[in-house]
Amino acid sequence: MTLVDRLLNHPITLIKRQATGSDDSWGQPITTEVRTETFCHYQQLRTGDQDRNTENTVYEDVSVWIPADSDLGPYDAVELTMGGRTETMEVIGQPFAAHNARLDQVNHIKMMVRRAAP
Image (tube, rainbow, N blue to C red; front, side, top):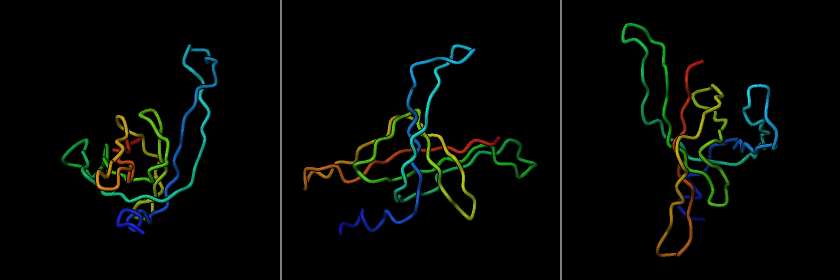
C-alpha cells in the first residue's frame, strides 16, 4: 500500500455527465449521469463571501485526489461529505493525472472542485 493509497480514505461519489445526443427545448444538450462510489483525499483551499457583513458563503474551493483509474472531466461533478454536510460540487478545469516518475505510472488524479451557493 502506497502513501497515496493511505490518503484516499474519504468516501466520494463521482458524477460523470454524458450527452444523450438530443437537445432540450432551449437547444441545450440533454445529459445523463453515471455515479461511481470510490474514496478520495480532500483539502479545503479557499472560500469567498458575498458580503463581508454576513456569514453567507458564496463559493468554496476544494482540492480533491481520486484513484488513478477514475474518469472525470471539466463538466462533471462530485458528491462529497464535509463537516456533516453532503454537497454536490462542480469540477473546475481539467483534472490532472499526477505521474510518479520513479514508478513510471499515474499515482492519482488531482482536481479542483467548487461548491457554489444556491
